[in-house]
Image (cartoon, rainbow over all chains, first blue to last red; front, side):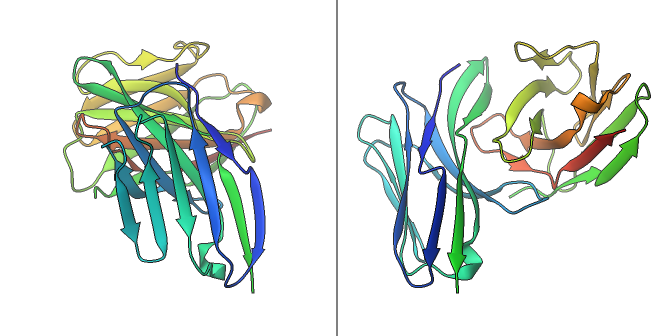
Length: 114
Length: 114
């Protein structure tokens, strides 16, 4: 099983600040996904990146997949209290046949203070 | 994305009893479903992968006789925690997939074993 390291593990910032969360692995993934999870709920998919060097934007969120498809970053501009949550990266890998499974990083718990 | 429901959303049981958790794909025919477990302040850990009509594939360290998975149709998978003990208390989350990397998660089931 491949491992994903996320950093930082915890992040507490003021509203309006920018932040970047990193997701790194020594292995190559076929895709990388970012999820946001709120307490007591399941993760919600934010984005999937599949091509090395790919950059995707979702309003104030910018996602980048590394050229070698081993790492990814999530940048949030002008963070708002509604961005508070657990951000999880997950790497996709073929587990046999047509099945893919996800390996999750440990997550970054973001708190945006008003 | 797919809409996934779980039932119950939370359950409290006595040690030694069995608990069944249902995962339903409401608008999507899920050939593959996944079951995850998440302990407090930790990430999601894959327990098993189930394909409709076949036996589940369990991750290393997960007891298949303790965590019984049935995926009898394209819209329903069940996880039964047999002879539950306090250490089985956790947040259990299912997801559905069409076989590609993207997974859609249910809202989770909080299990507390007394």
